[in-house]
Length: 142
Image 1 (spheres, rainbow, N blue to C red):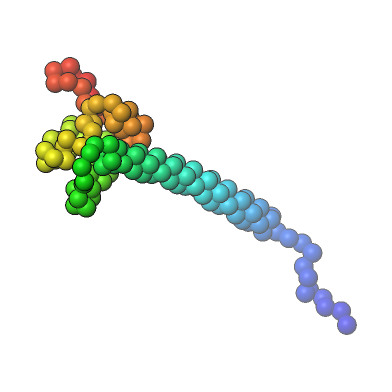
Image 2: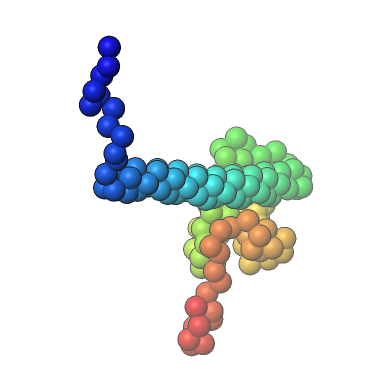
């Protein structure tokens, strides 16, 4: 039993070009997917590291504020101190951080750190992404 014409021996040039284009397209797609995954992974690792640093800085500063001075701190005050440090480390603008500090009640302000003073200023410089210090008015710099 002979199957004549079942397996053509001649392959057209268009079929060869289409096959090569398909292989190249699949390779390019796989490479693009790999590159995207690598860049996303790098970005995710950097964000996790920054969040880890911010979290440790916040806990450190909160611990100092709550335990360095005598006297009991109520749960509400401790929560407010924690929120202050979360926000002050998250905002990138120094004027906003100053506004957060100045809006605190006096009994809390006496315990927490001014964002313009060390060591809090140095922690903000290190762990606040995109932080920018605004130049004094009239200098024309941002």
